[in-house]
Image 1 (spheres, rainbow, N blue to C red):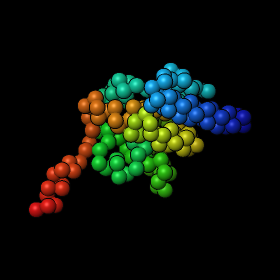
Image 2 (cartoon, rainbow, N blue to C red):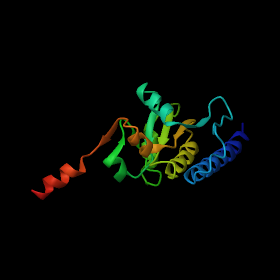
Image 3 (cartoon, rainbow, N blue to C red):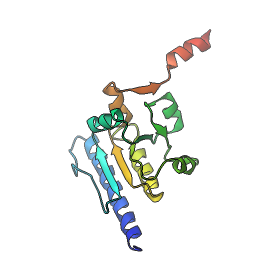
Image 4 (tube, one colour):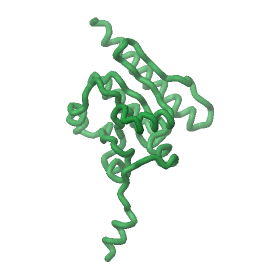
Length: 164
């Protein structure tokens, strides 16, 4: 059992590197390094990237918790409906993590394929013993473009009200 932890760290690092390389290659239009970035080193640890369609299906079936890894500023402006905010670089990250059940499926996202905040948060989640994590690499950009449900503040209305 003692060797499982170092193996998990190695898998996490490799998974993070593959995700980062895939995001960069996709952004450059060069295709993906690995099509299916699913990793399972035990029955309890599940890491996987998911498509927009898979994310939408999970959202509609209310399977798992959507986690926005962007800053609280961007989360407050717009986020996937029903998601929670865990900013990958904020100091209160551990407080929010304590409130989430460790066995719950987490669907982590950020702005889009060029954004690496979700991968960085996944590393933190793994270090805090979350074992069921999906990366939605399309992020907020793909979700909004598809017209899927978001919670958003109307900035234009607030600006017009403040001008009165």
